[in-house]
Image (cartoon, rainbow over all chains, first blue to last red):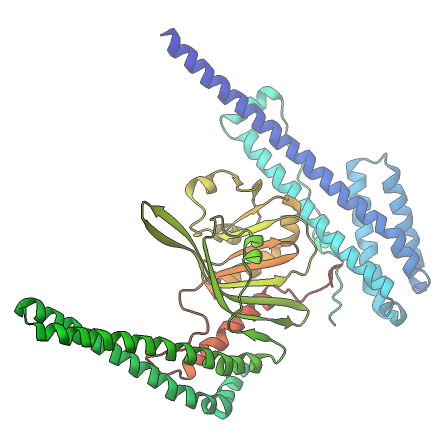
Length: 184
Length: 315
């Protein structure tokens, strides 16, 4: 009788430890995904000075946009921004980049610049990597939500005080990566 | 459609002429095959009569026919070998060159065992590795090669050894249009390597984790494993997932894909040999059209997956 009770307690303990670890793992996966998103964003911000340097000699009409791009980057890397402010500035950077890439068609000299074309490829790559890390972040949040809402892990999550996390959502107009096809 | 029409013209104007000597050779090979079978049948008949009657005359007949059978079988295989080699070096070579003069065709070459293993698509250890009909070249900006492969593993029990097929079909390697460092595998849901437990648990061999993606249709058909969750999504963008679904409709359920060392590897199981000419039936327009279509399956992989889109740092 006591032997059976001990076995039941041990099994129960194993299940509890497994549930606890699995929830922690899912919570950490979100942090990990957020970190990878941050790395991609930093990579994107690092490309902005190079872009501005490359195009400022050619794109006279977009001077204002280029100055704004530099300022927004400075604000982002200086820190001290709330998550909402970060998303807002990030979206504005996206708009500014799109404006630069759409208007580059008007500057034939720029179109011939190897440096600019390489930079454009790097930005395309970074944008797509950024989109991938956002998708990974959302997948991690989704898995975490499933775990904290489904029985029996929901009881453990309640005891651990685990809360819902916010999905990374971007407005439709910002879902489009500023991509230029060089094949034309 | 236009390409198919062009192939029809090519068949009429060039290929039909080129086929004539091989058609005569094919009939010769087939004849020696039929004679061999006939002699074998007679040998069996004489053996049966000799057994029941006990007459030594029938045993003599049996040995004569047995010897004749062996001679004709040897003749059949030698003729077939010459016929197949000549057919591939001339007819198949012409078809490949018609499709694209820059393609290189080697009837005796195949994808190396090293490349096959690097793809990581198959978990079984290979004991026998065979293949032929290697084609390589460029399609626009994408360098690629493919060949037929047949890989097997053996199971020995006492003195008997049985061979089991791991993969038989078309194996393709193409230069992927993005840089990546990790390993990502896309298996169809019906892949025999994925047992119930593999699907149930999120890990797979070699520290791979299951990647859950957003496309419902894609998730229904494929199962993805990778050692880098972000990179897997960098490769499998929403539009790329749609293209894989479309490609599956085109090639059947069994194809599997891996993304390793900035290459894409595709394994398409096919039961029939790739560019093997028939011996007992004529090699007509339909048969040769199949060869033409096989190469176009490869082009479909490159085109459907948009591998020529080079807008990232990999040019």
